[in-house]
Image (cartoon, rainbow, N blue to C red; front, side, top):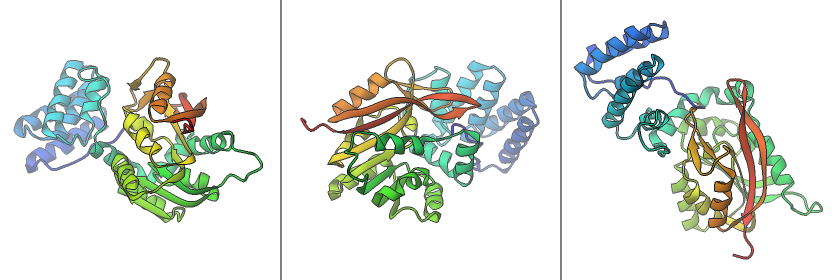
Length: 316
């Protein structure tokens, strides 16, 4: 998922709210110039109307007015410190701010709450998503003795969403735990009756709490999750602290040919292979396998991705 529709939060001014709705209607009918004019009038009336500023930025961007779009996105960012709409990401995409800003918790939660009801269909039918099956195959071939059945006493599904990865691994996990930032996604996963435990939480906060409780996992899976995190260092280090001595971490990323992390036009992060290898090593993990794969498509075109399996370094 890479885009959201407008988030309406009342400006507190009935006329401004109505103008905002009129602007959306004009934009939906293809009248972008008219929409921009109405939105400009709206924010003149209510200067702190973050949703209107953000939508004005989006409309100006579609009109090819980069300078005007940047100005509007900056006003949206300033009016909404929690950045529900992702104005900081838009500014980074337009190269008007830091290159790789972290995604706000509010933005990510809203993104997935909005898509939860149609998430499975959108990924599997429209985006040809196959991350869970690729991860399952990678874990099965990660070097475990073939004579021993593949089985994990406890598995953690990070950013579990609606449960697509949980379903792919349920038969080899005695205890299956899922965590996600979006309450709506967790509700969808709950309805599938796959997990033994489901938690709505920020991933970093959850991992920290699990470490304090003394929890350990034989397998940690992150399917299509790290594309929403710019700096993977802290979260991979936190995962390493939860792994059993022979445990495995497996995850997907979108990738690029350079180094480090990179914000894509889809407002998802790509992570280069050299960066991943350094990050895993710094966390005390060794790479069992890194393979190129097409995890999903975008507008009918395959997206370059990597499937990674790593475990604790026995020499560390």
